[in-house]
Length: 373
Ligand SMILES: NC(=O)c1ccc[n+]([C@@H]2O[C@H](COP(=O)([O-])OP(=O)(O)OC[C@H]3O[C@@H](n4cnc5c(N)ncnc54)[C@H](O)[C@@H]3O)[C@@H](O)[C@H]2O)c1
Image 1 (tube, rainbow, N blue to C red):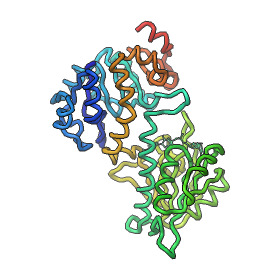
Image 2: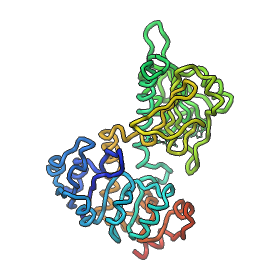
Image 3: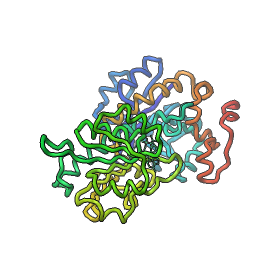
């Protein structure tokens, strides 16, 4: 198959769809890979690295889209890319269609085959191409939180691990899924006193068994959160209710009860945020302060660590990309139910329920489309 890796053109996006080592595996399997010149620069991968892995370098994004049967990238295409996409071209990337009608309409019009990373789902209901970014965001939430606790940033001026004779910082993680677990693990490693709150008792049992001794678990409810916000120095919001907006677990009236310089990191901001006072920020200006409480609410946290994020993403996407390249999308999706669930739009037909519902578009059965393809 002919595969294209374009440079990401969405503002502030430094990741790239495939690492040189991923390209090498695709080339070894007999595929031809075209990489746009400087596509990997934001991640510290250079044209020479891709060329050494067997890729052919093309100077412009137009040439990459024009030649490729499958495009592998990171973010959804943005407006200048719409017209570059060809009929029958397979696009393997994050789309988040339900949040953008213009993108959905454009992909229908271009008659492309859109396979979305975020809806690839295994039979045990895991989202293998979302997990790596949650892992990055979770670990980063603690790293950023620890930084903003410093007095220079108007934080409480407390060291995560304390020192002998001085108690450590107290960290509350609300939501014990992928993000929350990784956030708690890093906070525990730094020596903080950590509490994970979740509604799922089974999950809390598992965390209690596997986490270090300085991590405690608690079932979350409003009264406990009201008490906990008074005592914790860093509070990380990491809840998810699939397909719904995040619930507002910390409300405006709780802010004056917190200690001056408390840091709130709302990782769930991409689902609307789980703190009432959260509004999305960017890496250029990541925080704001209300009632002396610091809010960190960056919607694309992994974008700040493109090296780690690109490697983590390629580790997860490569096995799927390989199946698509080796078998073609029809056979690969027929044989792998996780990949099949990634299909959102096929040659103008919407085949994913969430997308059809979001914009009141007709829904076709994916099985029927696959049979006729
Ligand atoms: N900002 C970013 O850059 C970024 C990056 C990755 C993920 N995220 C977001 O982080 C959030 C968490 O993602 P995840 O992968 O960890 O999800 P997950 O499904 O693995 O975990 C969510 C957890 O929240 C718990 N939960 C739900 N409602 C709760 C409540 N009211 N109180 C306490 N716990 C509750 C669930 O039981 C579950 O354990 C999502 O909103 C996701 O979109 C943001």
